[in-house]
Length: 237
Ligand code: PXP
Image (cartoon, rainbow, N blue to C red):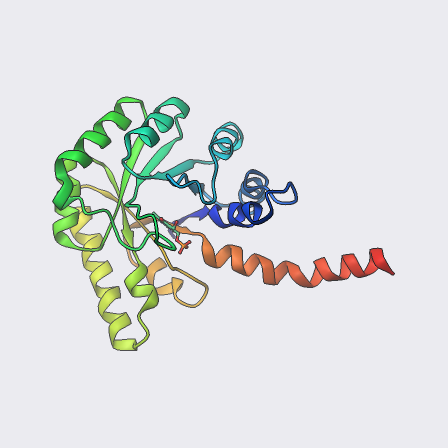
């Protein structure tokens, strides 16, 4: 059974919509831990659209499981990671206008820069994972960078609509897991996984951890909305 890491970025998205104190990703992280997650994930984006520096500081102090900081290889962000020392950093690509992390890091094309970033972060005593597409070229490049952990981007599998396409991308994931394991890498996976599509990925032998965010936060709203309305009705009666 793979471990489960929960990404709490979209709790911060809700907080940023009003900037208020009614919702806090740090509090949400403690709820996730009480529910039995194996790690908490948050992405400190360069544009700070959801998670803020303050959140990272508080999360590192509060999380009892494992804190996995997603981030780009921008020097200013690497400096923050080295100062704050999360348990793990996952390096991801970042584009200003994207709605979410659209693809994996192109390690093969940026071998020198990624290798240097990995070394700087590991020298600070932080484990490093690379978020990459399930593609042999990228996995081989990750191996060359000296990392011990990768996370395979499951987005193409998740959004495929036709069953044959979904099967094809699932097969690609399975082959990639095997290939990465042969290189001695720990293999995680995530992106776009939800309550409908997660089972076949969770069943792939050799996946260490699944990282899931958006679908869990969406489900939390539906599973809590009924009670939230009833409580307000009670107060306003
Ligand atoms: N893993 C990584 C590296 C990500 O960037 C994200 C999205 O922030 C996730 C997992 C979770 O993706 P989702 O929110 O679609 O479940």
